[in-house]
Amino acid sequence: MTPDIGDWVGLPFFTDHWPSVQTRLAEDNRLILPPDHLRFAALSRCQPAAAKVIILGQDPYPTPGHANGLAFSVEANVALPKSLKNIFKELEDDLGAAPETGDLSPWADQGVLLLNTSLSVPAGNAGGHAKLGWHHLIQDVLRNLSDQPRVFILWGNHAQSMKKHVAGSDHHFIETAHPSPLSAYRGFFGSKPFSRTNTWLTDKGHAPIRWA
Image 1 (cartoon, one colour):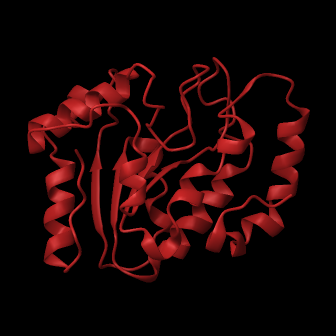
Image 2: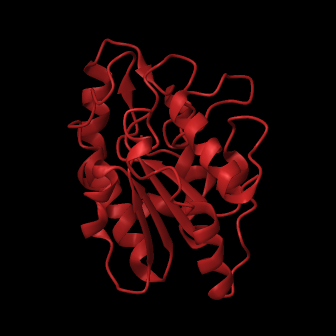
Image 3: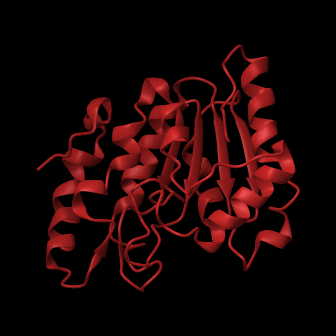
């Protein structure tokens, strides 16, 4: 069954790879995160024509109750995971404010595609679905979004390895260490991705993102 994701549904992934990914998901007896109805939330919430900024994560939070289908986001009543704490710390240092909760859906509604390179993860097993076939979808998404200049925020080596699937030379790439506590001090902190994004957007005649 093809998910309800609007204009993304025409991507080759849904014809060529989604049936096999579905089968492998169904055969995995572990608790899979996020729940089925949230798995494609990033694509449903931010359509191709609206996407101005792409933040590429790795895979969903492996802690039950955390992942909600938007990369790095959690529901408003959930305590901030460590990576999101670091993102908000950098946001406060960069722009002087951060959201009151970890729900990043207001970013998505402004054209920020919060996409993980895997859309599922077994509970407690970070990276457990890295080879399930989701990379075909991410490659299709990045090729699709190569049609006009956009901002691509690539945090960590895994996200940066996908850069080769973005065509064109007019995009703005922001590439730093991942905000994880294991790597944030190796170049994420102090990188000012939010102000840099807004400067580029306004220079191109777009409305800036209201990050906080």
